Length: 503
Image 1: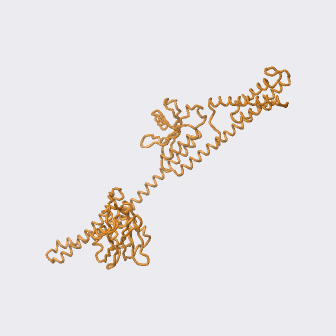
Image 2: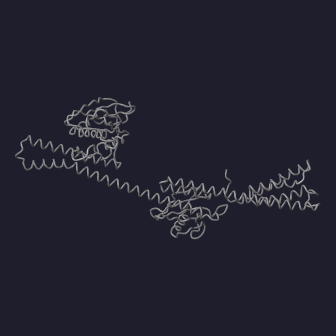
Image 3: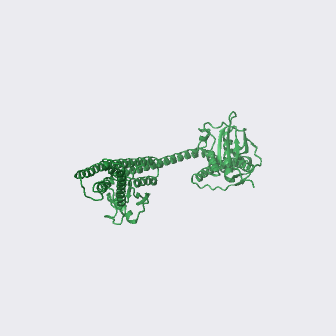
């Protein structure tokens, strides 16, 4: 265990002198008992032992006191005439002088060794604290965390309350405190004065006499500002002689960490901005390509009906209106998908889960996706079964998106199969088609604006169907799984959601 490296307080110094005198008293008792039992020369060496112990344990002052008390005790109890301070034999005077000199020299050497050991322990303790601070700051990404780590390191180094204030939004905020630091209005004022002047302040002194903390200003290369505060001017042991060295080291760590955090925040903001611009570009590309066909069809139909109304027979007019209706529904569905994605990303998606029958959900989804499934053989194998705990509207929308994708990407006349089942505590509904399947990793195709085909020959759509379906399921504590059908051509997409508890 490391010794206490703090300066000795008056109370601890008094205790050291008392213990040193007690050790001399114990040595005197031992010497008297031994002298009465056995005739041993150089019995004065017994008094050197408490001097050495006091020097190693308490320092030079208590050791010297032990040497003086030991000489007096040796003279009083062991030199003739005993129990007096007179010395009958002049040679014993030299013995006392030699004992005092030897004890003083030994105490000085031992005390110096103790001082050097304490300095070494203190340096090692400071280095360990600064190393721990550097490690903690490497993985810290929040400004408050940076301030807290620095305050804890300062409190450990100085054994005093510490605080780190950061300048944010035009005000100083104490984001890191340690050691029971409690700032007053005067301390906040002193910290502000230190930052404004660029000079350190001392607690209880000009310019804010009521402040209890010493403050040092910190300014980073990126012009961020902070203040380091330590309550060290009114310590029981006295103010440290040169606290600036350690404070400057911690201030350097603080400065680097704050700027690194600012750079990381700027990088994140740039990434978000780049992602936003990419999203806008993808959205523009999807909308500009896939809105062209329905808009052109609707415009052609209206113009034809208006200009050639008399030339069209009822059957032709019905066909034109049906085509316009189909394209209008497709256009409405595209806009609905875009609005749904906007709600998802804005976190404004209401979820109202309730027990729902899978068969009813599938029937409603097939009806919604009927225009996209025209020309396909829909095989609905879903029977009434265990109800699932879902938001009916969201689940139907997710399943309708899967069915529309199956209709768009599988050839006309192919089969679209819908199945359901249970797996543990979850129910599932899956859609299997006979299209080309996923060209790459299925997870990549679930991302926003991902399309299974490229070029002008691709099916119409915005590439949001699977992404919206997955988001809808995740909002209901469910998930979406996608894969190719293995040896058979086509894709399989499964929606999973929790089963409702049976009454």
